[in-house]
Length: 530
Image (cartoon, rainbow, N blue to C red):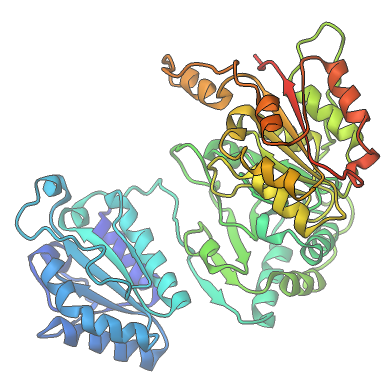
């Protein structure tokens, strides 16, 4: 099996970065012995000279140069030159040697505290968590250096080079990246040609495509190519109209299910999102064998860590407009479109009131222009299926995944969009991280409907504990009364325990909620699904 060292040289060849500027030390010896004939080594007698030569080469060629430095002493000697490279906006990939990771905890001789040593002069710094991450992170450093125009550092423990490369792991950097300041015609044409060539393309839309121009362009693209469009997993906003006949649903967040969902497709275009965001670790690649992947975004941070053959940084709306113009129109019957319909779970007398029943009642009453702010981790997917986003900014969630976002964010959105109905759907556990915001809602007279799903505990954590096969140490908190807390903060609230009470309260609100003049907390006591 090839080693990390072998894979590293393959990366250098792929990126056209086959000249190494260095003043070597013992932590770099394993990498440098028996250097391949096509990799050129350029010796500098001081690290300042090493980085200075690399800086000059990068400026002269317009491409990132590679500098190899020796742990603390080498990086320390090079800091002044790295500062100069940063100010000169010279793209550098700087690999810094480190002691053997197998005894780093004991701080042996030559151990370096390296990540902060050069201060803020590097544009990006990382130490691979695993040896097999080294090749991909060097590729990412290449793109980070280009995008941010400065030195990007990768700290590599000396024993990593001889570790077997894990070929089953997904590449976590683009194979190539195009940086376009505007709508690049060549990049549009390249991508259009790839889409036309594919027998079964598919789109994955993300949060950064959440505006009317992107939605219209992606709709045209989907109609011309007769392809399905998925929503990225954990998308904080909707990147495509979820009531469209081309909408395929919300992409799963684990690799095997992603591969299954995309199994019929040979070309995946990811728009306005990284490729692809995951949650719990699962071995294996993101995509099946032979699948070509392109990712397009206006934010370079989405792309530098994306698994993709091609990444394009570009203004999204104009690029997608032009792309939709360039692709050929496929005849009907050349692709199978999804058969997805919004769920409508209705409560039946005698049933336990569940979150799904609340969502079904909301779906029947909310206007299409409603802005839905979500923070209910255990029922998020059900909410999205019941209440699809049909307008830009129709769905909003915390991109980071931490709690405490929905209450205050819904208030801020209502201030910015006073003429649109705003509804926050929040779990009772989540509500306690941001409930103080309700005082502001009532103080400033902001007509937001806050629907709190009170199941008396951390449902998502209880589920994860069950999956882990153990007993959770935390207690439930069914004695917490969110409506009471809201009332104490001056916000009108009502706690309901039955479906009939819930719909009565909803029907007492202005139709569509557009004319709701004051905030209202509807605290709904729900059971948990089996």
